[in-house]
Image (cartoon, rainbow, N blue to C red; front, side):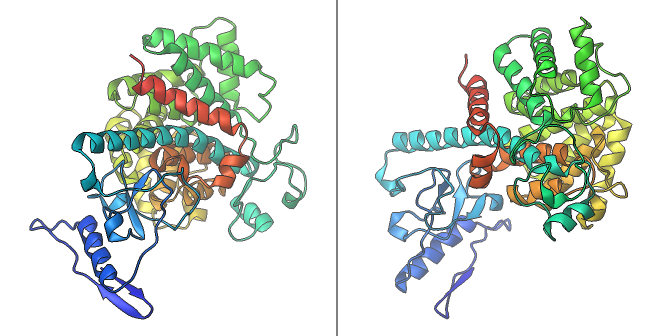
Length: 443
């Protein structure tokens, strides 16, 4: 490992154990010492409560890379580049030498950082899904070629209005002229699920689902439900309002994306109880979508969210979904088999009808989401923009990708301008915090 400073290369050997494992933590410590002997100091982000300074404490001058305390320094995925006073993270007074602390104090401080990291992951999932949804909303129903023609070779890179004049011609989505940053029914239904989970607490499945059904009906009749909601969702809600059971209200042969688009909160709430997670996620599909592809895709997205909280890789998410959900749905299994074959494909092909699909149906949504996450495993922004600038159901795809990536990377990974610009930002943060509280802090 080496660094060049003023044309001088400072290099140290990579620490390697007999089993072949590399230890970047120890190597970075050695590099810090070597730089210090030459009079060089590396500035790092001293304001972030989520990262440590690569184990190089104050006496070692800090480092240009840090490791996430939620993962630990032995995982290469934990290593992140950080900038001096980057301003993107919560304020922190800096880290003193660990040797100056008692073990009890060290445990307490590390425990608090871990708690902050968990809260940030829950906030990141809820804010992240809404941000992705809002980015994709004006792109829904449009072709990728049209998006790039209107906004340049990178496509949409920020919030724009559905009726933005750069689109040209007649709007693809009729209705009110919502401002940039507005989210859709995808986020609205996700919030309905979240509120039902919070309200239900530890209640059994039947009581939880009754609450969720009532929330769905309330949403369907709300004046805010003016953002091109799906037909199966509206049919299911109408059936619920007429008194049908949540088990029988859904369209039995529908495998639309409405079932998996709203289950990120379920992955958060039950990430420590895999059986409960799968039970609730599958049940949550039935009020509107009864096809096995919809049911298992809902389970898949909730499972991926839970694995994101555990800091698992997108490849591990795909493997787990193939093991747990694919055997119960032939359509989902077929869609998942295509993902590895298209990972090197251009997004114009991979995220199209000729590749993984346009995400209008549930199994295509899951496959496309895993493709975006795998192509951009460490970058929330890149993952959601890849999802938003697509043919077809762009808002739903970006919503799911944003929720999973937000859980994986935390709210601090979402660009500040997007956090500040999304509809009802503080309310979204509040939902994430309340979901965390009921998951970790309730009896």
